[in-house]
Length: 87
View 1 (cartoon, helix red, strand yellow):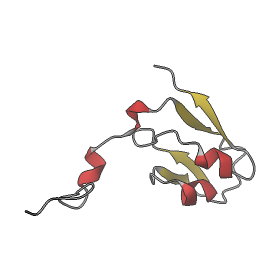
View 2 (cartoon, one colour; view 1 turned 180 degrees about the horizontal axis):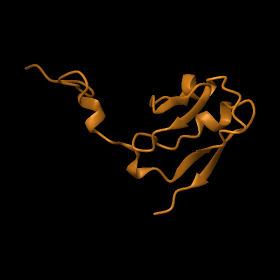
View 3 (cartoon, rainbow, N blue to C red; view 1 turned 180 degrees about the vertical axis):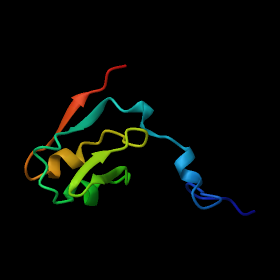
């Protein structure tokens, strides 16, 4: 008997339909004035929800951000602050 192991994406692009950020309890707030444009936040995000919205300025897509805080921890200029999510 063949079974599927782990998550299965049946067709390309279908994962964007699964918004995963609704259960987080903290979220990152980006201070774009402080941002140095290094891209560390983008590189370390395990969810791939951080994107460059303007040349050298990054922000998170809260529909997919799970609030892990890795981006804030790795920001060398401390331009990302984790805040409690308001429910």
